[in-house]
Image (cartoon, rainbow, N blue to C red; front, side, top):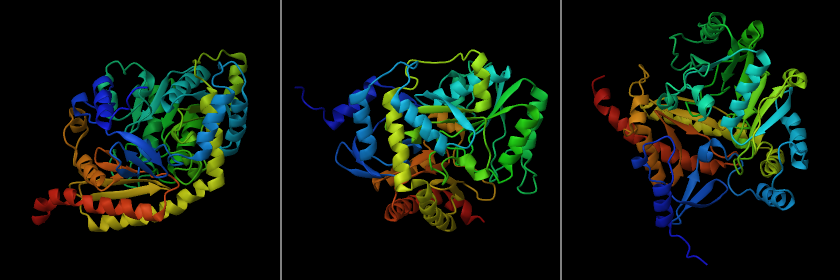
Length: 453
């Protein structure tokens, strides 16, 4: 029997022989995550941390859910793998459950191993179905890291891949950001000009197969559209014969207080992609769901897509267990209840800290955006700073919170706050208190400016 690795050996081996994602490798110093339970995880030194962003905004059930773990064990003991051309009990059971929880009208499913793969499938399906080529995505979006999905990503994680990403048939429209409108309008007097601009693009580009949107933008700032946006976008797509793809990889599965974020606006997409919360990230599963109308097309037309791990039973069984646990625990409703409490606490911080530009959120999905000037809405750091590996103010604040035992996702000039849906009020109090204390760092950077006002 080999001697167990020490925590320092785990870190050293990982850093030496693995790539750290989205970073210069010299700056990667991974912590050793040794175990986890509920809303907490423990590092290799035995220190416990409150996981206030659900790892990567994905562990909606929290860590160590007994029912999901048992489903993994049971599935492994029954059927560990089946080629995708077989029917399996797990596949049938999950398909039946999806009809209950997905937005009405989505009835045909392609199972993948990630949100990236789900989006790749969506692009292929949209192009095959429409006979058109172009996908309109939006800036301040993230849709994956494979060649097509990163080409459809609006944030600068796409930049290092170009010019290879160009020529993928993706064009970008302005994001919906009423806090800092990219086309310099002000809601509600704008008349939803961002949607009008997108319609102008469809009319002038031609050959547009689909519009791809995160209903609530995830990593890039939890951007929530105004009530009129999605009904207007749905009409525009219908008027021009363009499919609407909703990327619910992060915003689905109760995160925003509905099973899926599009439900807030009563809009039915033609294609919905999702992953993360579908298994609470216990196993890697993605989903591309389409309408029956799209499915009917492929009755007589060749479906040119597939891969070895499509509909892998080890991923489907735990998804069934995850949905049942969400229903048993009432987590969609709980997301609204706890989200209202979290939002109240975060808004109270804005009144105290001049570095906070805006607080926004739905359910248990929130962002706190930091600025150097509340009137000009100027961020502390730029995209180029991030790509160049320069110190980011939000990361320095996150480090101070880490020292207090709270982990929160920092990105550019904002925090993405997405605790497990099982979070308790006392845990919200603990995390917000740590953020309150750490924000003094950002406020201090503004003191010379404030003194001149």
